[in-house]
Structures are given as structure tokens and as C-alpha cells.
Length: 517
Image (tube, rainbow, N blue to C red; front, side, top):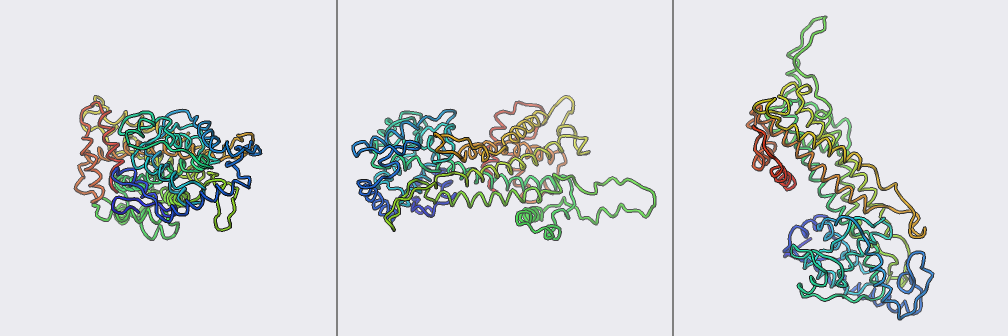
């Protein structure tokens, strides 16, 4: 936790909220605890001494399938540099700089555990680059998620050496120039340090931290959009009743139902089931009442649909926080037994599995929003509103018609992206990495799905706001519904006449992303 604008890292207590706060607040600086630096120093000294008489993978051997090649003492530093240079080969679009900064913070934290054999000087150098907000330009393609994020982390490691591209103070430049402007010097690698910098899951974990944060926020928004939808539908309140949901005691379902009841307790629009019974007649013939007996599933089953999403999001949060405080290097230094342990803590399956599960869940959230968009825009379904929520001249004005195309196409793309990466292992690295996690791609695709979800949920909220204006019921909304409606209307006025919406849509999308729930 940050205190006095300083986030102290000890390798054990970094949280997702810490990462969000650090990335969002340029006034925060990172520091490494004294105890951590002491551990790191002892670990580094042990590796240097142990390597004189023992074979240690990646210290005095080649890498991967070339591990049987033993190198002499004069080649060991060059080996570390070669590892970074050879793996800084990523391609494609740059990863979001916020994700990269998060990854750097995660890597610094895990190295602070003192099990990687790196020197305190390396950690101080990485810390200084982080605090200067010198962000490496890291391409999206290259990692298979075993031996961690080798390619992406190599691009981050380049910056320590004064190589590669970075963004600094809003400009893209060579790392050497940025370091000079920040009054920092390139770092000279020691034994094992190249390997320790790139052999871990920091990138997928850093991306996953933001995915987890956004998922929590989107879920809260979806609960609120669902509440407004229930108000607009004049829904019966028994679908969210405590008794109903107590009979199916999944924690997520009960939480969502409880949230809906809390939000809607101040609403003047929900109906009691008893009101329906006024239409009952003691007749033997079939007759039709004008009321809807029960709402369609996208209204009536909100808690049942969002409940499992809530539970998945909570588990993902826990997994990410365990991972960001874990040792994901190989080999690792056990000072308690004075042994070097060779293993596979770099394997990204935990992150890969969680990102894929969360991604699928967030697609379902997107689909729920899309279905309610269709409900409010289609008069054949809602039986209440003019086509596409026209406030003025249906036929002449098209109102929200175009936005439905955006929601439909974006939802369809997310449905395609929902296919899991976790099961797409392809052997590589001379079959040394014969089963891989694809965790980095899982995290990046999940981030794309969440961006899509924000778009569709924003469109749903615009539809809800337009419907509120049509019925002129703002005064009857619950307090939370009214607050959200007013936030939307501050950045996106009602559509009376067709107008160019591009700039307004960007503004309202940002409003929704920043909305405090």
C-alpha cells in the first residue's frame, strides 16, 4: 500500500489496487524495502560464488535446448546480453503503455523476493526507470507464455541497457536519449540478470491486473444498467426478491440480487406482483390481459446471468494477486538450503486459464447488454417505444439506429474472441517448451473483449437514457439510476435531430469508463 506518495515493494504485498494507483498517479514513486534489498544482495553473491564450481542453467550454460553447452567464465556476461538481444523480436501493435508500466512494477516486485540471484543495483536501476515513467514500446506478438513472457520482457529489459524504443513525457524516442534526459545511465548486466529480467509472467500478470479491474467496473455498470432496465419495464419486484434467490444460494447470484434490491429500493417504478392479480377474472374461457406476466430473460434473469460472472471476477482477482507476489523465475536461489532449484514457475497457466474464463464471462455480459439494446430499439418487442427511440420524427430521423449496428458487430467480434487460448498449445523451442500456456495472448485478448464490452454497455446506457427521456420519468428513478442518467446526459445530450455523433461517443465512452460506481 502506498504511503506518503511512496509504494514500497517487498515482493509479498503488492495488490491490484496498488498497481492501478501507481499507473494513474504520476506523483507516486516506487521504493524497495531494506529487507528485500538485503535478501537480493545475499542471493546475488551466492549465485556468483556457486557458479564457480557448479553448473547452473542460464548462468554458465546455454538456454533451452542448448542447455548442455557449458560456457567459460569470460562468456557469462555476454551470454546475458545475447539473451536479451535475441529475444527482443516482438512484432505487431504496441501494448498499452499502462499495461507495460504495470508489468514493470510486477517484475520489480517479484525480483524483490530475492530468489532470482539479481543484484540490488539491477533492482535500483529498474526502479529508477519506472519512477521516471520511461515506458518501453513493447509489441503485442511474441510470447507463448512459458518461460514466461520472454519476448515482451526482453523489450522491457532492453531499456535498462539503453536500447530500444520508449515513450517518455509523451514522446517516442530511443531509450538512450530518454535515459539521458532523465539523468539515468544504462545498466551493465551481471550473472543471470538477463535471464531473471525476462523469465517470468510479469507482462501477462500486468495486463491481467487491468483486465481484472475493468471487469469489476463493467460488472458494477451492468448491474446498474440492469436496474434501470427493470425500472423502464415497470418490472415486478419478485424476480429480485430475497426469498427467490435464497433458494439457489450461489454467492454470486445472491450478491447481484442484493445489489439490485439496494439500488432499486428508492425507485418509484417497480411493481408488486399483487398488482397483476387485479386483472384476474373468475371465468372459464381464455382471455388476454394487457399486462406482461413476467419479463423476458434479459430482465428477469439478471442475477442468474451476472452471478457466475461475479464469482469468476473474484477468483481472477485472487489469482492475479498471488501471481504478482510469486517467484516466477528459473532457476531460483534457495538461500535457506544453499541450493539452486530448477523448475517451471514461469509457466503461465494460472493467468491463461483465468483470462480465458473471465473473457468468456465478459462476452456474456456484452451479450446481455446487446439483447436489452435490441429490446428498447425494436417496437415489435417492447410494444412501448417508437422505432430506435425516436424522440421527434420517426421515419425522417433515425435516432439510435446506427448505434445498434455498432453494438451488434462489436458483440459478434467478442463472441469470436471468446474462444480460449489456454487449449491452443503448440510445441516450440526445439520441443523444449513442448506444452505452453499462451497466457500473454489470453490476457491481451481479454483486454480487447473488455474494451468491446465498454462500447456495448455504453450504447445500452445511451438507449436507457433516451428511453427515460421519452417516458419523462427521471424523477421516479432510484437515486443511483438518476445519478448515472445525469452523468450520461452531461456528455451526451438527447437525440432529437440526427447529428454527427463521433466526438460525443468518444466522450461518453470515457465518461462511462471513469464513472465511479
